[in-house]
Length: 236
Ligand SMILES: NC(=O)c1ccc[n+]([C@@H]2O[C@H](COP(=O)([O-])OP(=O)(O)OC[C@H]3O[C@@H](n4cnc5c(N)ncnc54)[C@H](OP(=O)(O)O)[C@@H]3O)[C@@H](O)[C@H]2O)c1
Image (cartoon, rainbow, N blue to C red; front, top):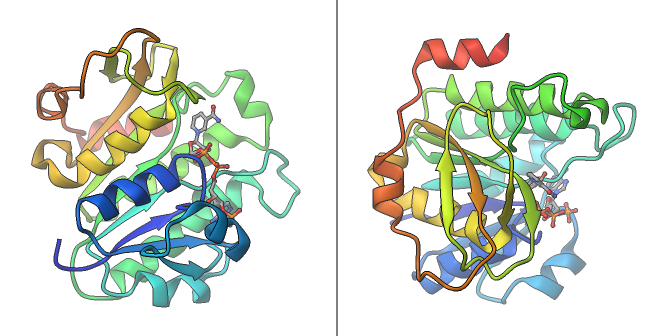
């Protein structure tokens, strides 16, 4: 791509894989997170690190300026009264990033890592600071932003190598674990595949022997594009 790609949460366990893959493709990468120490430990020096906090809108404007794409992989806290509450990290933070992107020219692709179960309000995960409700609100902000986007909903994350068979699903009815490397691959591949624009999907990977690289174009082409009705229904 002609301009840098921002990885917000690029010091994290999925984010650092995304940053490395993008660098390997020759991209200019901006890693955004709060801890400089974490960046030093987990990112190669070619990744440009910006200390910024999605809860503080003034801090994200400079690192996002001129980016051709953004991958948002921020981990929330689980206490609705805590400083990292799901509301601030999964909804308000997403809004701050969207506002910064919409204030500049261009139309960057927004890849949001959300989670499976997000439309199932009675799921036990929602007891943690209404995490699922705030994730869904963040998703809906991205879907209605007018920017090209991809919403990725992983199930429970594992640190398996990510070589087992991978399934992309829609409708948020299933369950299952997924390897962090598969999620990182999906974030990166989505940036280069037109079929991955305007879609929301869940991910599940089977632990098993290597099957080679998943056929990403085929997987993305098999997805239904989101419709405004589908996004509204998810809000109910
Ligand atoms: N664990 C699961 O089973 C599971 C299931 C489904 C989805 N997910 C989601 O998958 C994503 C990746 O998970 P992971 O394991 O890679 O997470 P992780 O290792 O905990 O990394 C989280 C990243 O978010 C950054 N971050 C947190 N708060 C921030 C803030 N206010 N401003 C800017 N950056 C902030 C962290 O950096 P700093 O702390 O330095 O800011 C770090 O880079 C997360 O969104 C997670 O919620 C997880």
